[in-house]
Amino acid sequence: MNIDNTLYSGRPQQRRTDAEEAIFDRLDTLGIAYCRVDHEHADTMEDCLLVESVLGAKICKNLFLCNRQKTDFYMLMMPGDKPFKTKHLTGQLGCARLSFADADKMEEYLHTVPGSVSALELIFDTQQHIRLVIDEDLLRDPYISGHPGISTSTLRLSREDMLRYIRDSGHEPTVITLPWEA
Image (cartoon, rainbow, N blue to C red; front, side):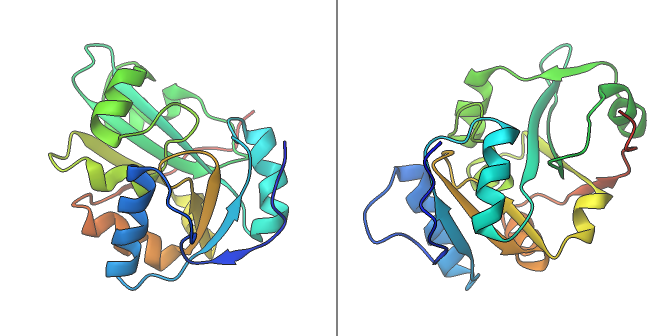
C-alpha cells in the first residue's frame, strides 16, 4: 500500500468526494483541528497499521452491524487491535444476534462503503437510524481516528473533539466494555 508520509493539518487543497467535503466542512464549522494522512485504499486493519506510523495514533476499528431482522443498526467503535466477538456486545446491548449490515444500508445511512466506515459519517444519519456504541478502552486513547467518507485518508482527532463531533451529529454514544479475549 502506498502512503504519503506527510502528516497534514486540515483539509486537502484539492477537491474530494462530496461526502469528504461535507465532513471537512462540519469539522471546520465546529472549529475542530485534525491531522490527516493520505494513502491508497486502506481496507484492512493490516493496512491501517501502516498508516498509524505516520498518523501518530492508533487506528480505530469501526464495525457497522445490524440485528437479524435488519431493523436495528449499530456502529461499534473499538481499538483496532482488539478482537471482536458478537456475544460480548449483544449481551450488553440486550439484543439478539448481530451481524454485519448490508452495504446498501451503509451507503443509504452513512454515504460510504465497506472498509471506509467511521463515526465521521454519522453526520449523514440525520434520522438517527444508527446507535453508536463505543468500547471504553478506545476512550483511554488521547486520539480517535477515522476515514472521512472513503478509506484513502485517515484523520486524527482528539478524543474530546471526536466526541463533540459525534454529539453534534445527534448521536449520543453508548459506552460498553468488551473483553480482550482472543
